[in-house]
Amino acid sequence: DTGVSQNPRHKITKRGQNVTFRCDPISEHNRLYWYRQTLGQGPEFLTYFQNEAQLEKSRLLSDRFSAERPKGSFSTLEIQRTEQGDSAMYLCASSPGQGNSPLHFGNGTRLTVT
Amino acid sequence: ILNVEQSPQSLHVQEGDSTNFTCSFPSSNFYALHWYRWETAKSPEALFVMTLNGDEKKKGRISATLNTKEGYSYLYIKGSQPEDSATYLCAVDSGGFKTIFGAGTRLFVKA
Image 1 (spheres, chains in turn green, cyan):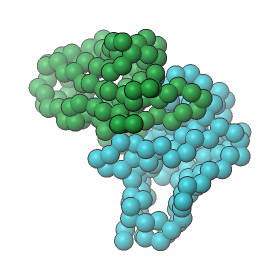
Image 2 (image 1 turned 60 degrees about the vertical axis):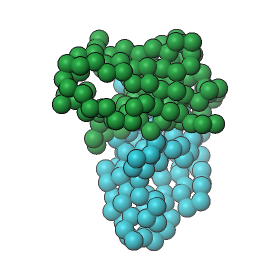
Image 3 (image 1 turned 90 degrees about the vertical axis):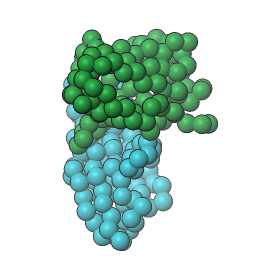
Image 4 (image 1 turned 135 degrees about the horizontal axis):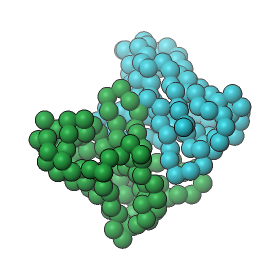
């Protein structure tokens, strides 16, 4: 069990640029989640995959955000035309999807939009 | 809309003090409650998962209780140590795909 891996750890970008983050979940986990966390808040749900299928996407997520999980393995989260309000910690988590399994989180990608 | 509330927002205690935090949630459509510990520069780590009313879980000096009828859970830390300093997150499943998190309680333990 190598844990959930996220890359990059930090990303600084200028407003208007596109960014892409990657998440490698624990290999036998079929569920994958993306959350966003800003200062003083708890993790906010963005989207969820069961294998390669994206089953739910938060209404809070604008059309500038897109996530994929090709082949049900790693996932990418892309933000197009970044805005300063996108600055946050982006957390990926996976779980085996059995019963009440807890989420296993990566260390997150901290995005700063200048 | 599921809303998970945690209190207090932050807590400063001395080493050796015992402390507790609260997590409140709507009692309808409850499926499971999770507690996580999130240390700075690390990833959130699962502490407990509880599903049944009256559940109690313990891990070393940390324990948690669950009341699903009134919609709350308590997390207790006995004899706080500096290494307990972290953000403690409560998260609730309502049977769907989403796990909804509270804003967390930030604990600072001074040596």
